[in-house]
Image 1 (cartoon, one colour):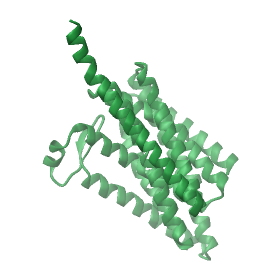
Image 2: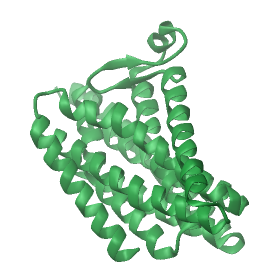
Image 3: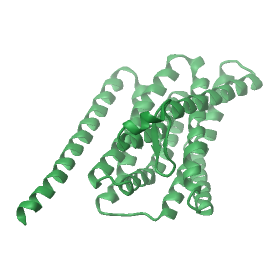
Image 4: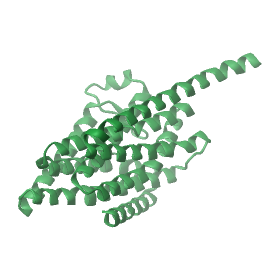
Length: 301
């Protein structure tokens, strides 16, 4: 009896140890990257810090799963809607409007400035559409998608299909944070990072709960949820580096990040929140998230 118990405990303990070590190594790498940029490029360092805050919020959201916390489908859909609302407001107030202003500051007229940002928005959406079509991934509800050959998806472990889906979701958030810190004053960049971090807390919980519902162990679900947030600081560094390379790239970067986020909102988050019959609750969550982000942006920005 005891022998069997030991055999059942060891794999679980080993899994927890491996995932804990992985998370710690990833966090240490992020800290070293921040220390590197803090000396050389402060704007990129600020963007990285904003992305790390968002990643920490995602990790925080996974912790209730450690204590066997579960969520009803209705609550999950409200959280999805809340995240969509935050991202919608961020697109409008933290990316598109500052993008048009940045283009006008370069000497462009109102129509040209709006056109530049509009084209950038479409390019951002097209880039995410291409990634969605090419990269095999799996939705929590819709199932497997993407890949030039559907057989590619079957060959990959479902864990990594979920990871790819989470990456598609989080990269635009990271890009938006990075571009915002370069394109706006520190307060506006902080407002965007704060808003995204707030919606990342329930997002981290939803991801971990969904992974457990899909059959993954508690340690694996929590670890993948935590690690998924680390995509955001990496995206923040990329966005800040591109936008900081040339002032002319700034309105393009802001618009591109907005387009990528809009694609994720419309293609991923809203459909997921409306598929289980909780459309009204999800819409209420969206409106609350939108208003919260609008307040953060206007007050802090």
